[in-house]
Image 1 (cartoon, one colour):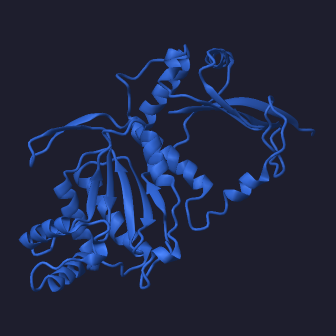
Image 2 (image 1 turned 30 degrees about the horizontal axis):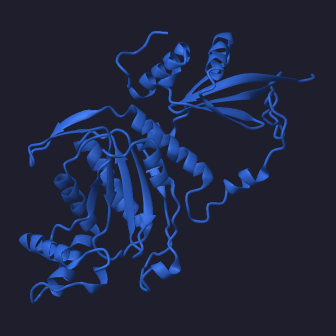
Image 3 (image 1 turned 30 degrees about the vertical axis):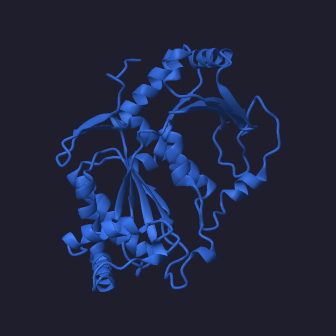
Length: 351
């Protein structure tokens, strides 16, 4: 029986883009290893360098991983709601949407990256999910210049900085990192304050003295191993965090200490919760109603469009769909966010 080729125009909506491509179907269905996606609008050769580059990451985040990581960050920020939290220690009311955290090791790394991730980072994520009801999170592992691994973490909940530090320090001390930090500083300062000249470039004498005085109050048992970054003044938080967490900055050999035990990063580079890892966006076949709204969007000439042989991308924030008259597309995506994440602008929108 002769098979017939059918091209199904298809749309995918994400928070900041619309993608249009053609699905390829055979009738009757037959699996084909040589079939290619076909686009009605363009006739260009496939650039094979793109396919090859996505398979070779050279120890950094690959092109394919960057796409998945970027999408996870995009959906986390999109679905995070603005919250007001009263801080018990300062008495201030804080308004925030997401928390951007860095977790470090206070002493020289003694264990493989995979063990740090499995024993420390995983335990930390389990605890913040349990005690702070964190649902959506994205993390990225990187190497510091001293060879230690550290982690950047984005979450959709508020955790007081003191509780965050206490919890992380307790967890990493399962592998002895706080104890070794404490022993080093008690030995270094055994006769009183002693300046660390190797740190003067980034940590002046006054700051070192202040840290020494604070450390003495708890016998150097609570190192400054966590940092919560302020995002208030960042104009485009999606763009900033995506660029920050997907960058590749493999340390050069001359930046590493001679005795750094794990200079080359191993194990997983990034991760997120299950819902974000499997996100695909709202997907639908393009019918006459959707086609009309797409034409309306393009007629405004305010949307940047990127086209290849196999797909076209319209770059716009999904909130702009309503402004441009694509009300049905906005409703489709709003309902998608509600169904997948329980997120809504106000109430679920009836189609």
